[in-house]
Image 1 (cartoon, one colour):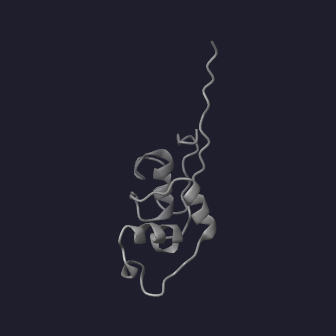
Image 2 (cartoon, rainbow, N blue to C red):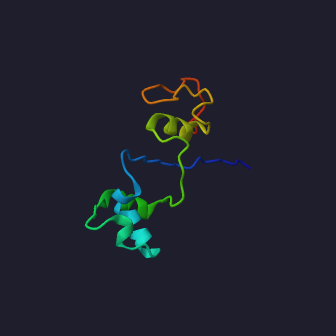
Image 3 (tube, rainbow, N blue to C red):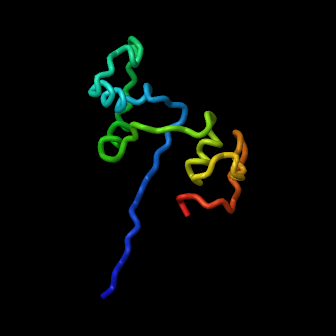
Amino acid sequence: LTIILLSPNIIIILTDEHNIRTLSCYREYFENQGHNQEFWGEGNVVDTPNIDKIASAGAMFTNYYTVYPICTPSRASFFTGLYPTEKTGAYKNHKKLIFTMSTFAN
């Protein structure tokens, strides 16, 4: 008997310079949860049909936190599972992740 283990194909899309109010898929989700227009701000309607289509066919996160408020350290933590201060090399913006650092991609 031969068993073949297949790894799942996972695509992770990180949009940059967005908050939850700039993706219309979240507007629809949170309006269905009872959040009113004040949550979004009057007149703030952004349509993101391509991201919405991906979200409807995949997964959408509704509870998430970041370990650091700026891009590079936060992404280094996401990819490595380590806090930015744990010798990832990417402890502030424009610093590179250490080449030999293990990530979920390897």
